[in-house]
Image 1 (cartoon, one colour):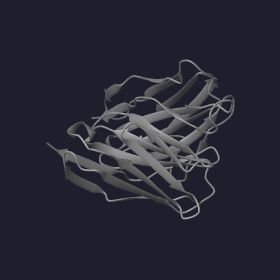
Image 2: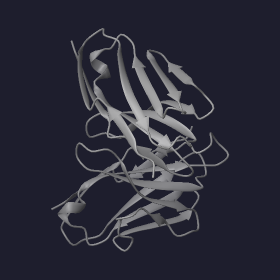
Image 3: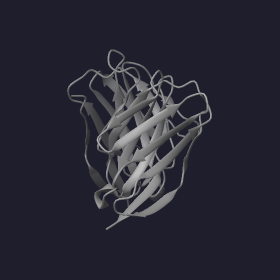
Amino acid sequence: KQEVTQIPAALSVPEGENLVLNCSFTDSAIYNLQWFRQDPGKGLTSLLLIQSSQREQTSGRLNASLDKSSGRSTLYIAASQPGDSATYLCAVGGNNDMRFGAGTRLTVKP
Amino acid sequence: GAVVSQHPSWVICKSGTSVKIECRSLDFQATTMFWYRQFPKQSLMLMATSNEGSKATYEQGVEKDKFLINHASLTLSTLTVTSAHPEDSSFYICSASWLAGVYNEQFFGPGTRLTVL
């Protein structure tokens, strides 16, 4: 069974810093990997989707990488802003299922 | 495109009553729909997977007689929490996917917050 781990569980940084969130998974036979943002009490906002054949995806200040062989993905956030404060979830898509990590709770201080 | 809605967005009910949550794909036909549950400060846990016209497949530890899932059409799936109890209070999120699109990508609904008194 696929297990997804996110490190760190929580992170607090001053505004303007670049930061990296980590995600690891145990089974490299994946279809895709997706990063989501979740604000308190809200649903999921999809940030980036990386197909298994891809190495990275970029959207604005966000860059996500995927290394299937090592079972790792990183989400890089450049020039962080207070509005980036949220929980970031990594989810690994398998054959008709998706497994989520526990998330990294990010706080960006003004 | 690829919008998924849920109704209601929140519901409060008394212990022992049943609650139905709807999940709709608004602009595509969903061959598969998924139901997740999220307890406070925890991640999403898959409860069940349903394919249109078939019985749902439940994850280990999820009671199929308590959480009834119906996927009667390609745009609608319902989750009924029968005889709800306070421990069923949670955030329920559905997602939908279709094989013709980005393979296996799931599109998520906004969630339904259930509070059982």
